[in-house]
Image 1 (cartoon, rainbow, N blue to C red):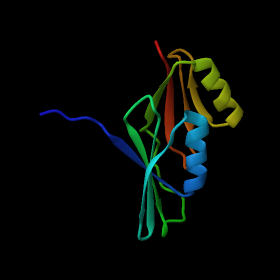
Image 2 (image 1 turned 90 degrees about the vertical axis):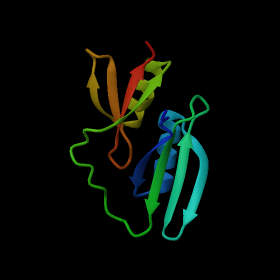
Image 3 (image 1 turned 135 degrees about the vertical axis):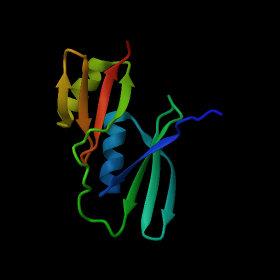
Image 4 (image 1 turned 120 degrees about the horizontal axis):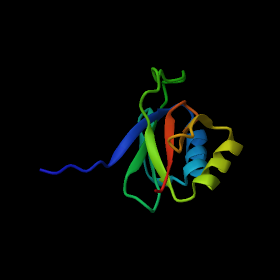
Length: 120
């Protein structure tokens, strides 16, 4: 029996803001959408992979989500670490850097942590 990871879900408070962030920061674009009664689910991805990030907006949830201690994250590998770092620095979304490990983290508009690692 084999399993393949296909998507991860993040709930968001402002879908348009989140879509703009993920496109600018990580090059992820909408690949499909589900419009339901009181919710919208948008899947974003890039041509380089078949893994998708599911962004869920709930009409009745206006407050920020409680993300606990942010001890979870999704990691992205980049082929141009310096250019990515410069972009994220300009966007003001870098929240933690670990130069010894050669990685850093950014936060999305809802506070989810995203790890940026170079291709090694």
